[in-house]
Amino acid sequence: VTDAATTGSGYGVLDDYKTLNTYSSNGTYYLYDVTKPMNGVIETFTARNGSSLPGYYSTDSNNSWTAYSQAADVDAHAYAGKVYDYYKNTHNRNSFDNNGATIRSTVHYGSNYNNAFWNGSQMVYGDGDGSTFTSLSGALDVVAHELTHAVTERTAGLQYQYQSGALNESFSDVFGYFLDPGDYLMGEDVYTPGISGDALRSLSNPSKYGQPEHMNNYVNTSSDNGGVHTNSGIPNKAAYNTISSIGKAKAEKIYYRALTVYLTPTSNFSYARAALLQSAADLYGSGSSTYNSVKAAWDAVGVY
Ligand SMILES: CCCCC[C@H](S)C(=O)N[C@@H](Cc1ccccc1)C(=O)N[C@@H](C)C(=O)O
Ligand SMILES: [Ca+2]
Ligand SMILES: [Zn+2]
Image (cartoon, rainbow, N blue to C red; front, side, top):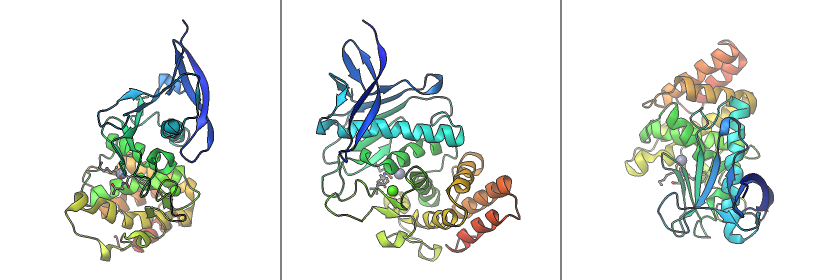
């Protein structure tokens, strides 16, 4: 019996049709993408609403992934491939370890689970409860957020607490924007399916969703690892200021260089400003308008 890379198709969480890089073996099709360079693999599993990982390979009998129960699998797989392609094509990074590590996702994690995460080895997505979230892999910015945690872990290693943790969260949101640049919203495609126009967070208006957007409003708390999902509003706003003044193409180069060259596990907001300024100087010159825009972006959020 021949095993082979195949092309399937199906519908995502938003009922959107897409083709899929799959694999056939012994008459069964797998969400197993072998099309990436240097034998990189992207593979998708289902936890079948349990909590053991990775769970079971997502399979189909005829390579037509059209069941509603498969929509989360379809998007986790397709969007992981998109994020792989982004890091390779834009930053010449071959997977999160820059050495072709297998990118593994598991969907249908837990019951009514309103979150997604990187567990140090793989991405994990809940189905949501249908009110706060629908299946979280249905949003490209969510997938990019989670895979960027893997990149951060292998590079800056920003500790997931207090200011370094808020930076960790912010870099995941910012690369979520770079993958999904149609808006400055985060999670809008899967957040509150019954309500249109809202989002979990906004990079342009963090305060719209309860986040501070200036250092004067930094929230001192021990919950949520020191408010990592709250205080990320401050670097998120600085990122919006940067992107809106210098454009996406320059901003993504500066952010990638800061993350991979300068940031460290204990970097705080002030150090992130310095790292981004140094990256801007390296790439565009210290007297450049680009450099001055990054400076102004962080001045505006009160981080020096
Ligand atoms: C398991 C413990 C929590 C891990 C937090 C993960 S990394 C996380 O930040 N998940 C994102 C998911 C996301 C990303 C982009 C857009 C929408 C939703 C997140 O922001 N989770 C929120 C709900 C949170 O944990 O507060
Ligand atoms: Ca978005
Ligand atoms: Zn996160």
